[in-house]
Amino acid sequence: MGGPSHDSSDFFTDKSAKIFVAGHRGLVGSAIVRKLQSFGFTNLVLRSHSELDLTRQSDVDSFFAAEKPQFVILAAAKVGGIHANNTYPADFIAINLQIQTNVIDSSFRHGVKKLLFLGSSCIYPKLAPQPIPENALLTGPLEPTNEWYAIAKISGIKMCQAYRIQYNWDAISGMPTNLYGPNDNFHPENSHVLPALMRRFHEAKVNQANEVVVWGTGSPLREFLHVDDLADAVVFLMEKYSGLEHLNVGSGKEVTIKELAELVKEVVGFEGELVWDTSKPDGTPRKLMDSSKLLGLGWTPKISLKDGLVDTYKWYVENVVKQ
Ligand SMILES: NC(=O)C1=CN([C@@H]2O[C@H](COP(=O)(O)OP(=O)(O)OC[C@H]3O[C@@H](n4cnc5c(N)ncnc54)[C@H](OP(=O)(O)O)[C@@H]3O)[C@@H](O)[C@H]2O)C=CC1
Ligand SMILES: C[C@H]1O[C@H](OP(=O)(O)OP(=O)(O)OC[C@H]2O[C@@H](n3cnc4c(=O)[nH]c(N)nc43)[C@H](O)[C@@H]2O)[C@@H](O)[C@@H](O)C1=O
Image 1 (tube, rainbow, N blue to C red):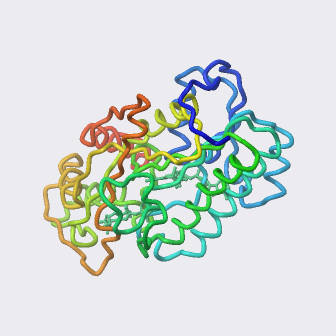
Image 2: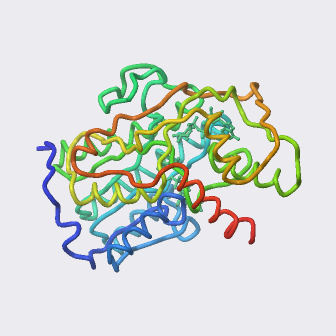
């Protein structure tokens, strides 16, 4: 019971199987929907936040009782960058615990065949060995700016493991690195670094400003993965992986925040200077994940950071700026 299986599941055999993608309007959920549709899946069950608030246990249970999905991909969560995580710790721990507890438990109780839970690389200790292997989990103190979110995500992994151990139920967890792409959140303060900088450079270019402020020292290292690669990995895991252990999903490529800022500046075409606001937190110094277990199963990322930035900037201009 609970041992890993790398054999194909029957996820791909019935393209009319009912799949609930929770959080389908977000960065990750929307990419998963696009990917499933590109593979020919026809029976996706989708509910916006206003149609179904996943923090409401009885509403979630009624939804599962009525819809009875066969597969669930959990991409709904309270998500944000370093400032949002640091400013709203109660929201990050409470909302995420509520959403994941409701969805995982109702999925099990209403006969879902397989569920995939998405965590994040922030589950690992602040000073984890690099690249970070899956077994670094719970080996040291967390990064303080996002420990509330990390604790919720660690609980999600453990909940999937507990249901597998007690009920032999097929719940798996994937831990993505920092993601970006179409449908990202471009909020000036609450978003992640990449969309925040894209917007700031774009607005500076349009307003012919001389400089752009970037947070922290520029020295932290981050690994970025385009969300279309992540969506591909999610479908791959649904088909190929069944096991107790969570699996890392990364690109294997890291850049400093300074290098990222220079790259975004170039893609956007801003010609002024960068100014570093060192009163803002750097967060964890480095978080490169060791994704060799997933790569060993046969999955590979395909989109380079440069190509992904060009694609995302085009999407931003066409869908956010022109609205
Ligand atoms: N973005 C990243 O860099 C990374 C993301 N991840 C993980 O991927 C998953 C998805 O993240 P991402 O797509 O970036 O986040 P987004 O904020 O883009 O999307 C989250 C989605 O969840 C929905 N949602 C939030 N609260 C509720 C609720 N109470 N009821 C119903 N729906 C709700 C949101 O709807 P609404 O906007 O209407 O509230 C939104 O559609 C998360 O689990 C996250 O931890 C992991 C690593 C990195
Ligand atoms: C995915 C992951 O994302 C979060 O962790 P993070 O990687 O630290 O996230 P971030 O993208 O917000 O910042 C990365 C780095 O970039 C710097 N930085 C510069 N200028 C801006 C800026 O303008 N905005 C932001 N947000 N950061 C900036 C910033 O100071 C930091 O050094 C978790 O809270 C948690 O949500 C999680 O799991």
